Image 1 (cartoon, one colour):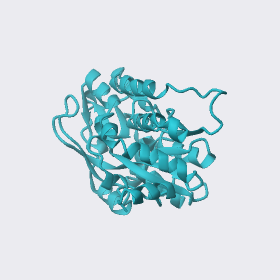
Image 2 (cartoon, rainbow, N blue to C red; image 1 turned 90 degrees about the horizontal axis):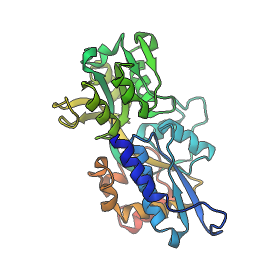
Image 3 (cartoon, one colour; image 1 turned 60 degrees about the vertical axis):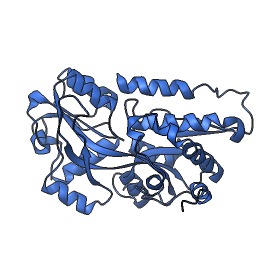
Length: 323
């Protein structure tokens, strides 16, 4: 699997240090919540850690970025202290800050802080060609994977369902597979359609469209237009044609930005050094995944940042004269 191979290679590159009892008392260990191993979140977290760990002899910070349940799980990991940083959709950063669903049963997370944004993401629906699904509406009566609990894809899917006044009963089967499980399930004809909120190109989408005749499904219509008008953290988005086998035309959908978040309690020096490690090596960072190739400093410190910037990030951006 292409996505797993890329992630595994990056994991190998950043895992050379050991969290042993002999570690310096001055060492600080930070953990970044990412996503499934076939997704861009995982690659992003591993890539950030790669550059942080290169400077560990100087700043004594060592970074770890394990796979996780995704954006919603990463918000909860920040809240509980399991993670120091978490990658999430820009809308989840906003919802956590304001105590909106799916975080409405918890206190508003007023201490969540933005660090920088990453790749653009698109809500993606891929369907078996033989299922004759040519629109989001045509998912009715089909076997659909809406995503694992705690993932951005599931939260977005359910937000679209709410906008369309749907519940799970409109499908013949609802599954909650993790991203790494979707492609094989489609190939084995256990589901008709899979969903993902992800940057492109993506390994799981590539695998599914290579092993199965599959089509990208547009996410459009009057209910989607109304959702975009109401929920301004979403924007119109496009998956370029020709990116995946059997899909030569552009596919319209909705999307947003992936963002790296932390909390106000995180040591400003840790945030500063992490930010410095990435931006001082941004050209090399951009080569670690095709989804990163269009990253630029101006957008990364502004676009999709739906929470206040952390003081440690502000310090670096001011030093560079960017703010």
